[in-house]
Amino acid sequence: MTTIPPATTDRPAQLLGDLFGGQVEDPYPIYAELRESGDGIHWSDLLQAYLVTRYADVRRIGADPKVFSSDLFFDSAPGIHDPSDPEHVRYIDAASRLFMFADPPAHTRIRSTFRHAFTAHGVARWRPLVERVTAELIERYPRDTEFDIMPGFAADVPVAVIAAILGVPDEMRPRFREWSYAYASTFDPVVQGSRRDEAITTTLELFDYLGELVAARRVDPRDDLVTTLVQTETVAGDELSDVELLAQIALLLVAGNETTTGLIGSGLTLLFENPDVHRRLLADPALLPDAVEEMLRIDPPLHLTIRKTTTEVQLGERVLPAGTLLFPSPATANRDPRRFERPDEFVVPREDNKHLAFYHGVHFCVGAPLARLEGQVVFEHVLRSYPDIRAGEARAVRRSSNSVARVWQHRPVIL
Image (cartoon, rainbow, N blue to C red; front, side):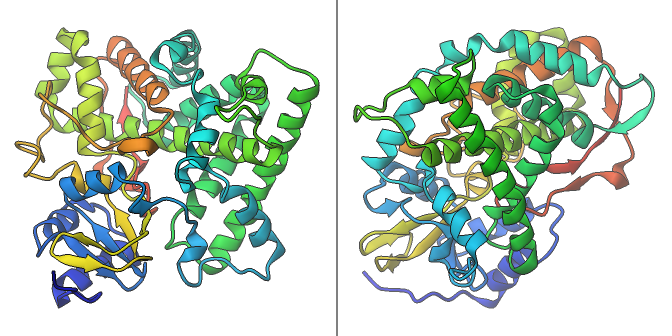
């Protein structure tokens, strides 16, 4: 085996600079070129890590936590957090306890607290809530009037749902959305300096609120998810501490918000761009579950995750030493022609659609059943109640610049 140093040809380096150093409206052409260049693994000077783009490699990394560890936090990368800043230290103390940044057995212990809550059967009881929230939020808008569906509906649905599930009052929804955006941005390694400071300050407000909520439910149990989590023992026979609990609950808020918000934006865009599929779904709503899976494959909310090698390992054409940071890209892998036929086409139904939108292995998204339920309910309601929904002003369409979750930020529509 030959060790290849962290270097790229000029073209991949230029593409990576464009991808992570500026505003890229459509990342998929860059993803495709990087995936087909060399072995599809490229060093980023900005991230101080390799971007991994091909399906087999991305899936392999998720399947082997012993070699590709999640037991790290972004302070592993230089210059991201300031150990002399009390707010940074407090943020790291909570956020580094997330089970997404742990390997078994620590990961198994924390994640087991959710084992009863997010099964497909468990989330089914929340369908009436999702249906009510969906109808309540979209029916505020008049027909035949253009509006931006992302901030006024797509972002509000998952926040309203998770807030209700957690037992948070409706009047807290706006704060939850603000907190969610701030916390999500802290996972973007490109967000640095004053932007990171501001995001962490706002995130600590969320931590304070959730810490008070957890403490209150220990004293006064309610019929909500926080109470369930407080009262559920781990597989190790103990309970999570308050700071462990608030960290996981905050993750539910952010991950659930970004996933469903992104799914609504990408799904509507795909229907507008593929009117034949739109017509088929109107004629046969039974195809909706397949359509949602294909939406998740072709334009998923999660574009990057992070891992660190624990030992020397060969990946692609190179040998990576222990301690190498990797950014596997599910979004890029989901369009790998080695795995999917016609990978850039919106195919409904698609046979053998084992996409990586929720990633793979022990870190497969715990909230995937809820995200799927929300997506199916939203599109059922929209297609049933607004069958003629159409795209608004194309020039106003824009993606988020968050390199981890490049969801649609603006998507004008007309009901």
